[in-house]
Image (cartoon, rainbow, N blue to C red; front, side):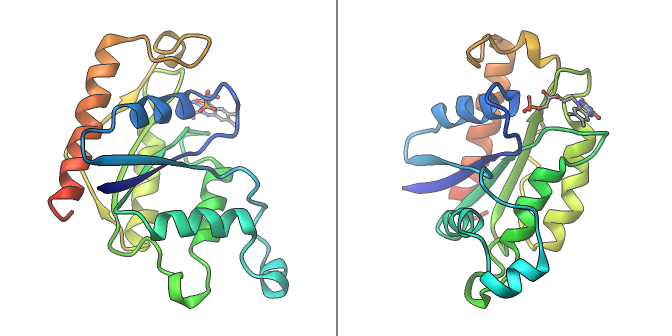
Length: 185
Ligand code: FNR
């Protein structure tokens, strides 16, 4: 069984990115399990806290999840044409020691997508993640691009994906990434 971890970069209950992530999880092809990881509970990075207490529990838990998976999918919002601070903060914590899994992203197949109510569907935020994930040594998958724009009309009030075209594109995205991981990334 191939195991992928999906992480949404929004804390909002009604988050479009979390809704997109859950729709992707439900589309896992046969032989693939997609597990939801969460950034909830990860505090702001503080080197003094780290020196005293190490990596906080919520960050360590997410880090362990990534360490034990075959590939990572990020569902990123876009704030001011860039990466939301809460999401970057979570990933930053996950790159800290202990040394045995300090480089948890190294060599890990990685895919990124995102949703926004605007016209560009997180294009710039997704681009902004690339140098970060390159620094962390991930193996990015560029087989398909998915920017979900006008998200208010793509999901219903319960976060269910209701737009057929987006559903089709999401399925192509999930299946393409899963095949990449299964082929050895
Ligand atoms: C935004 N939003 C936004 N959207 C976008 O497409 N481009 C942008 O640059 C920004 N900038 C921005 C800054 C800040 C501080 C906030 C709070 C929001 C809108 C954003 O896409 C919208 O709030 C989404 O709903 C956020 O994603 P979730 O929480 O729905 O997953």
